[in-house]
Amino acid sequence: MPRNPRKHNFDQFSDQEKEKLNNVKKELIEAQKKEPESLREHLQAFNDGVMAIIITIIVLEIQPALHEVHYQQFINNIIVFLITFFIVADFWYDLHLSFSYYIFKPSRAIAILDFFFLAD
Image (cartoon, rainbow, N blue to C red; front, top):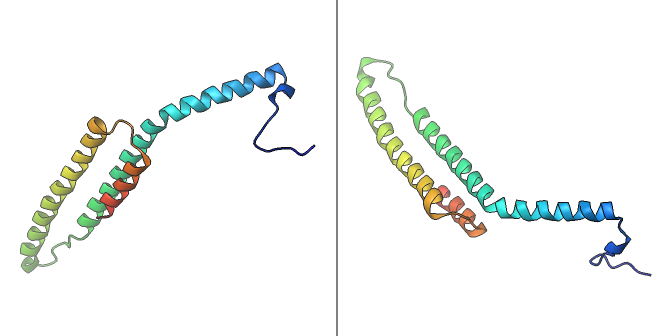
């Protein structure tokens, strides 16, 4: 008798095996209910990491002043860094607000759009 891989005969299972199978099904259903929350947390952590890398790269671009003639350029670099830092911080804050208040259950499309936003 050929076995169809999509159909299972659960009547052959013992009561203990059926109970284990039901417990696994319940755990799977609970995990699927928690998946959007988990995805939201992962997207927030990913966004935090990307923002931290952006800020790190920006601060690495600041060249220290080696001579007195370089202090003006150093101060200009610090000012540009601070302006850029606050712009990036504003993006980060807006992303957290959007995920906290507007996106309760992110979908796959939201995750993909989030990657495109961070790539810009």
